[in-house]
Length: 224
Image (cartoon, rainbow, N blue to C red):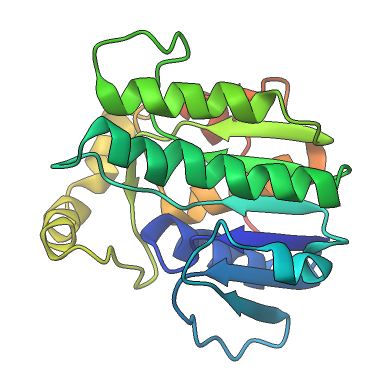
């Protein structure tokens, strides 16, 4: 399987990349991002673009892929709805529309978030914009589109958030995560399990197009 990964430098994207590297069924990984990843892995190739919506001159390099894992995320803290929409809806749809045209047999897997508002009419700004983004993606002419709505994600294997405050928070939670997993399995996951579930869905599909936390957990394959 040949895959494209957007957002590989973020916490979720790092987890997905790790699992793609470990999966023998994935032969090629094209990483598209704003900053260099610097990977020396044999099956990784990179395209660095300051503007991820400007892909016209590299379209030939985006053809022939089986799946896309879209892990680009933006925080809604301290930004206007217009700015959040530009970073979330506009960016995601610009990329997805291009890929749908170039790879109609592609499976597109989008990382959204628990609480996204599919009605597009709720009071919570980020949830409303995420829901609108999800709905627009589901209308695109891909082979399949799957929306992942994870809750709390605990980073593993040395993966870290790029935000210092979040790194501090995750370090504290790490010691009690096993307890959280037992007490609230419908609300928590790890970068490892999320990445493995996304790959599994890209390979085999899922009975639902929008996967909440319980659905995500159910798609995590048995340990290698």
